[in-house]
Structures are given as structure tokens and as C-alpha cells.
Image (cartoon, rainbow, N blue to C red; front, side, top):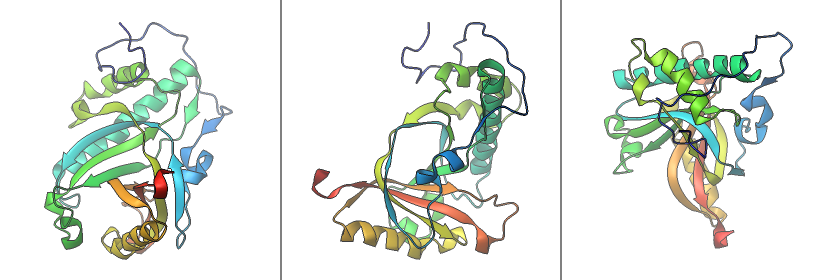
Length: 232
């Protein structure tokens, strides 16, 4: 059977045969960084309060130091490989084209002090890549299955799910990841000054290709879920 909500279906479900489309250079292209600038194009030095709607992602969980963990690298590879497979399927099955979104991460730990001490081995993370709203669980399942049948480490851990983030504060950090501390502190101070309570996991969106970008020029969106003052 099919998943009635389009979410949470297993990878083994199949879609019915559909019309196949061919790629055309003139296809309109959806780019989340361009088309959702309110969420993906903050300015450095400015903090904004945003309402993040429920969005669909490919995601996978893990733990450990992102600088040294082979598991972290395997999950990143799996997410991008699967996301490009979904993009290919969208063109073929729906006639819709999109730019694969940036890598994102939700970060937490049993003891939040480890983020100040930079004990990265104790960090827990969920890595994810946002998908266009027309991507369903069935389409994603079929696309992902075409690449996880190969020797793609961590491919079986990739899942399709909706993440409803809600009201958050966010800003843009420019510089090395290990220098984010003061920017995160300003983000938290802003929320407290406005009467908002911090809640949920710390969210980062990596706009730069770390393989090709000078650490001093890395652009990272820092976002923190909040409970609005007065419950607004």
C-alpha cells in the first residue's frame, strides 16, 4: 500500500508507473537558497527572528567528532548521493528541476557543556538536506534505493522525514567553525533580551564548500529554536 501522508513510508514501497520526462535546459529551476531567502540568506552581523515552516528532508543520525569521524563523512556522502538521485528522479518523473540544497546539521549533547569545552567526541548530530515540497516519501524511497543498492556506506541509514522547526533566531557566521562561539553567544543573548527562551537543538546550515573555501571565508547559518515571549 501507499503512505497516506506521503511521509514515513519504508524504502521498499514502490510507486506506480508514471510518465517519464527528459531534461530540458529551459526547465525552471527551484533553488531553496534563492527562493527562500528569508531562511537561507541571513546577513552577517544581524540577528533575525524567523518562523520556519515544516520542511521535508533526507536525514541521518550519528555521534562523534565531525573533524575526525569516518561515520560523519560517510553520512555526508550518503546524503548528497541520495539527494542527487532524488533530483534526477524529479526531472524524470515530474518534469521538475531543483538545485540540491546545502548540508544542514542539528546538534545536541547529553551535557551541553561539551559545546563550550569543544569535546566534540560527545556531540550528537542529525545531518540533513532539504527537499522541495513536491518530493514524496515514495519518490524519495525509489530514488534512494537506486543508489543504496551499491556499496554506499551509511546509505541504509538515510530517511525521508518532515521537520517542523517553528520560531527561531538566526544569523550568519563568517569564519572557521571553531570560531562560532562568540556568534552563538550573541544569538543566545539576543533571544534572552527579547524575552524568548531557548529550546530544541542547535541548527547549522553550511553554505560553503569546505573542500574549496578558506576557513576564514566559510559561511554558516546559525539558527536556534525558541519559545516566544508570552507564548506568541
